[in-house]
Structures are given as C-alpha cells and as structure tokens.
Image 1 (cartoon, rainbow, N blue to C red):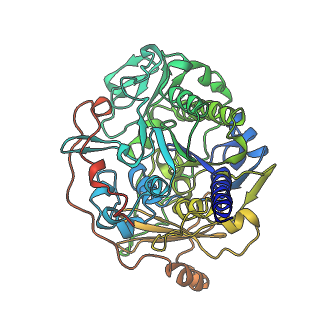
Image 2: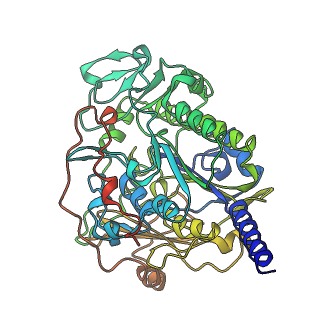
Length: 503
C-alpha cells in the first residue's frame, strides 16, 4: 500500500510538472530600431505600407497607440527596457554609457537573464542590447542569453553607388560634388545591391524562422533584433519602388516652430540641425521621406517572416509576442532629422503585444512605457515578481483595456525629461527650459503653453513625475575597435554575471 501511494504521488508530481511546462508561455521578443509611429496600426503616416504589422495586429494584439520609450536614443532606451531601470536610476543616458558599469545593473538580472534564472532557454540574434567596446572585444549583449547569433557579422548590405545619397560624403543620387558635402549632417540612403534574402535583417528573420522549427525542452525567450529603419536607409530597391517619389508628401514643417521655446534667460533654446539645413538646401524632403518609408516597409517584410513562421509552428498557441521600437525619429519636424529629443516624434514608438487567445486588435490609449515590459512579461509568464523595478506591469490592461492606469509615459535624456499623460505633454530640461502642449488640440506641438498661467496646475501635477535625483554616469568606457561589428564578442563578461547572485 505504501509503495502504491508513493508511485501515485510520483505520477502526480510528474503530471503537475508536465502541466506547468505546457502552460508556461514562450516569449517572442521582437525589437525594431529607430522606428516612429509611421506604421499602419498607429496611423502616424497614411503613406506607410506595413502589411505585416496590419495582419499581425488585426489577427489579435494590443496596439498601444501612446507608448513611449524610457530614453529617445538606442543605448539608454534598450538599457532601460532590459534592465528595468530608468536612466535616472542607472546613470545610462547616452550611447557611450554601458549599462554593465552601472552599480544597480551589476546587482540585478536583466530581462533575459531573469527568464534564464527562472527556467527559460534564452536565445537571440540581431540588435537587442546596444553594442559597446570593451577591454577585451565587443559587448553585443551576448552575455545575457544562453545562445547568441550574429547575422550582421561580415554582412553590411552594400549600397548601389549609382543611386547613393550621403551628406557627409557629398553625394546626391550617385553624383559627387563638394557643394553637396556637409560634415555636420549624417544622413545617407539608397538601394542595396544585395537581394532581399541576402540582407542582414532578412537573415535575422530567417534565423528566427529556423529556431521556431526546433524542439525546446524548456519554454523559450527568443530575442529578434532588426536594425532598420536605423541609418543608413539602405534597403533593396523593391522597397523604394513601393513609393513613387512624385507622390510622396513630406511632414508639414512650421518654420517658426522653435520660436516659443525659450531658455530661462529668454533666448531661443533650440536651432535647426545640420541635417535639416542640408535637406532643405538641396530640396531632398521627398527623397528622405521616401527612404525612411522604404526602410519601414523593408523591416515590416522581415517581421512578417517571423510572425508567419510562428503561426505555422507548434508554438503558435503558447507564445507571447512583443513587437517594440526602441524610440521614434524626426523627419523634419521641429527642424531636425534625428532622434534624442523629448518631442513626440522621438518619444513615441510602436508597441504591440499578443498573448495566447487574442483574436482581434485592441487599441489602448494609455501612456504605457517600454520600461513596463519587464514587470509585465514576468507577470504574464507567472515568474516571481521583482520588487525593485522602475516600471509597472500593464497585465491588467490586457485583461481589461479600460482598467485603471494612472501612470504617465516618462522619457529621460541627458538634458531633460518628458512626461506624457493623456492630452498633456510636459517637458523640462536640467537648465530649466520648459514646454507644455495640449496634443489633442495641437498634435504637432506648435504652440507652447508654458507661459499661460491658467495651465499652472497642469504643470505642477506633471512636474511631480520628473526625477528629482539623477544617478551620475560611470566614467568607465572603452572605444569600439575598428570593424567592431565583425569583432569577437568579449568572452570575459558572461562569467561575471552569476545568475544565482543577481537579484
């Protein structure tokens, strides 16, 4: 009798573990670099052709139309999302700041490490973490995963020189002229001589497709990092062909847009950038807009390969899919063509989340942040709650999009903070320059309301979310070696990340 009870208990334990294993969701974590809201589900630009995103969201996904990044530039944005700590907590404000040298990151598991620590098999290809030089090679973020592939190594998507445009090289549509050169601008675009299947992001997508055909003995956390539409906008000609140049409509620009944004001593705080001046001088507004749109359509096609592969795999019904951009991008708005500002063009970015069982698109207007992904994913996966994260789980919004959510979207730069809450967007710099916009009435943020006293109470409420203390950045940093993309990954980092000792 005793032996029989023992056997029954053993069988029950095996059955319970099997059920747990079956119910533990996989995570497909898809990052897109430098993508703003110019995608069909977000309706940021009606010209954008993104059928894969349309299909993915319409078949079932949460579409967060007011999601923001924690920082409007690659390194700090990804460091925040992946560590769970805002720049003001970690001291990671710029691309030169490596999160590994932050005191708090040294003590805490990053998002993939936390999943690995809790029984997941983690793997990635492409750009998930930002790259940094180290004393022993290059830090690709490879140390955070059980497996890490590098589709970009020895593949640079060469450009068709006869159609190349580059501000620094002084080339416009294949023609080189010293009058075209501007050392203070860094824009370039043109079709690659690679076929679609030879390009970097295609190879990242194809890798993900092959991984989804594998047999995993654990639930997986799979990072898929696409580099486009990051500069240079070099993608196959077929994606440029989607957009007829004569039909392109560039963003509307207000030439007096910056006049009402003043420093504390009354001077104009911002000036047009070198990129903006170069584009305007050579009348390349349509060409630049087309190149960015082509790059978005290209990465959309790559995304389609991955989500279609998931649908055809045995993991289709037990995988959480997250599609996120690391931050937005300016295409002339506010008289600039880059990122790293606190205006809407830079802080807003796509965020789509699908959990098993979703059958339609659900649009959420709450101001969630990418930094909320860490606590959300561990809650959705049933992992132990991590108490010290800066973000907040929005799992309740997935159950009920109208659930209470009182948090703003906070974005932090080296120089200031953006607070987006409902129709109000407040910005302040560390030197005291302030802005306030009612984005329902003024979506292009042309009218700064900061001097209007009737909005003082709004400013006071939003100011409460601005970090009072800012962690200083670590001074430890190393230059990237020559051809760092092809360089060996630093093998000395992973042994320092003992999962048993990380919180």
